[in-house]
Structure formats: C-alpha cells, structure tokens
Length: 176
Image (tube, rainbow, N blue to C red; front, side):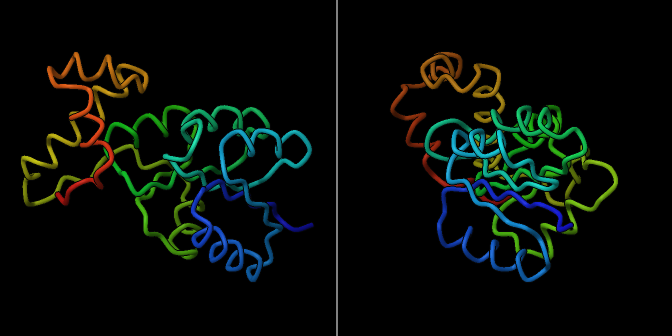
C-alpha cells in the first residue's frame, strides 16, 4: 500500500509542483488549501506524512499540528514557511512537528527532512551575528507567539502602533 502524503498550503503553484513530485515518488497525495480543509480531510483519510504551511488564510498551520498528530501518532509532519523564525520553529516542534523548513524547499529537501530520526530543536549558530532588522523580526515573532497571535496585545507589549506591527508582519523576514 502506498504511503499517504498530505500537503497543506494555500499556494496553488507550490502545491501543484509538490503534489506531482510526490506522486512520481509513489505517494498517494491529497492537497488541502487551509487548516480547516485539512481537518475535514483527515476525518476520512489519514496521512503518513504531511507538509503544513505556517501562514494561510484562516487558522495558522500551527493549529493543525496537534490534530494531525492526534489522527496518527506516527505521522511525520514538516512545518514549511516563508516566514521562518526561531520562535515558530520551536513552537512547531513542541506541538508535534517532526521538522521545520523555510521556503523555498524542493521535494528532495522535504523528504530528507521528514526522514530524519530526530527533530532539529537546536538552531545552528552562524559565524556572522544577526542583523538588527533580523533580531527585530525574531523578537516580534517571539512576542506574537507569547500573545497567541493577538496583534493588538503584541503591539501593546512591543510599544508600537498596531498598524505598524501589521505592516512589519506583512513583510518577508529579513536576511540574517
């Protein structure tokens, strides 16, 4: 029997390419465009492997991880995101993700990450310190997580206007 592979992402181009790549590798593939759609899907179809995007319309991919884990305790779950931060990586692993990868990632990188025995809970320390802008991004992500994604509460905690915080969150994370 083929292993089942679930792709949860709202990017149609990415899901199309990854779905084809996994189908060629003999996986039975299903795609969900939101965490809510994935929740409905796993009621009748339980995957062995899953990639979950962090930021999608509706609920965050983080909210889906415990539900996937509950449906199949042996499932390997990879959190994928274009908004990589240390705080979200740690949170994803704590919630039950097997691995965490920043986008863009190809099928080989995804399968390599899913087949690692242990989760990467240690963040590699780079030779070069993070830029001030990257430190700000990491701090915002940490405070946002502490306030359970509440933008207004996070803005108050950071001492900035809510709209300013929203603009910062819409930008892609800066390079290290």
